[in-house]
Image (cartoon, rainbow, N blue to C red; front, top):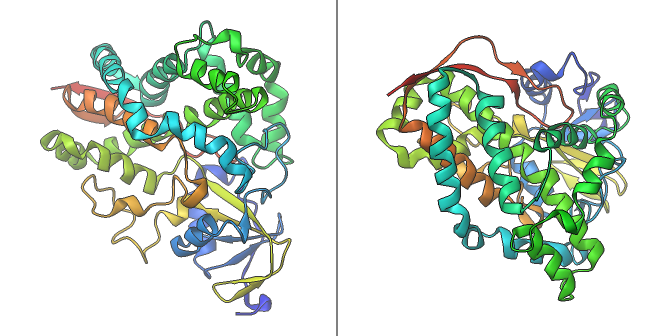
Length: 392
């Protein structure tokens, strides 16, 4: 394929009009070829699983130090915009806290909080799956294990909204979000100070790494920011997206009730179909070839993960939600390679705890109205999921 053969996409996928139907719009646009040219941004884009894997794993060619849709205005470059060897400076200490083994000590706490909260949620009858379940649970347990002493936790939501909108820093959605954010950036920066974390918490451990010379104080502060900015909003979205899929597929809720051990597979299937991050972009470091398309150093590429997760070349009946789907772990929602999501084990634990608690208490989940898509450049999911919970 030559550059003249690459299909050109003229529409802008990051607008108030296109985001509610982004999956359908981009699935149709990207079905034209393995690699397309997104004209409004001058970026090569793909919805193919195999190409997303290449972009994630070959960091020497597809660098994280360059963002496809523009430099993010206030996001620190540490870790999220670094490649090896710099990337490992913060990544390695972070993984000592976020490995499945390290997180195991929190499992009993997550489950106890989920059990208590699930009783209260089921008693409500009609709920919003995002506000009353996903956000309520994650905003309780996640800041708790990080050890915040005193925080207006709901303010984390507008901060995260701004952070994810900054993925496309020059567009109207980001500018409107920034205008309504008020002093949320200053508030958040103040919250991330050492004195605002309990010494015996995960946040306290991170700052002790600075005392021990494992990290610089600046890197420790940045690591706490990164964990907050990436570790809770995506999990809220994943739980909300999962509840929407389970409500729309009552046979799959029945399957979960029959086999509660499938709750983890249900999470992976949710991530495949409704990944909480819409896109991942990279910069090209040297001339290369991507599926026959010659790329030059300095080019930019991006994967649309909501399309990648439904690639029919990888999954049978990709638009069907199956809580017992085999080999679903091949999805790209958490990335792959050196930049794979560090907090994925934590997200799995949180989802499993709250959905597992509901499975044992709720006979049926029913939609009570249309779900409302979240309008955000990169945070992909639902702002509202109205539900009725029928007790078991």
